[in-house]
Length: 197
Image (tube, rainbow, N blue to C red; front, side, top):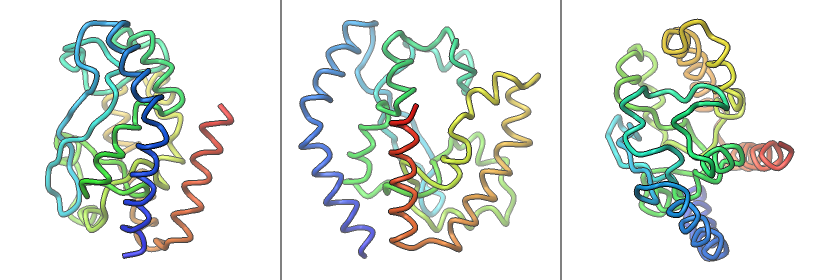
């Protein structure tokens, strides 16, 4: 209950305070490349149910056809403004709407595509007790995920066989340690690491 109240209050406040910034970003995205302002994609959320996640579009239109993973800082599918938005996690700001809708929380496992959820084991399904989050324990541990994928000989295989199982381990650890104070700690860590980039 406390977590939901926190999510609602601070997502509303965030949208009000950031509205001028969000409007400017939206204009820049439209000027930078053709396509919609928002990138909307189906992800798997709480109780293993799909929902539409919102992000600022950081890729050229139809780029998803060339692969689901973003590889390194020089991925040709990413727009000029997209690199900046991704670096400082600004592309995630529209997920404040997801929080208000109840699809997401500030803290929780990052919502994954159904394609990758199909690689989960039965024991891993326990993480769907949680609402997905904008940040989380696994997200902090894998904040440089794109660089790890860039170094991998086969990024897709490395993501499925190494990163997914390790992220699931962190997500299950979060499930055990979950508390309001622990969430606040993860939020502060996230802000610090983004600002310190």
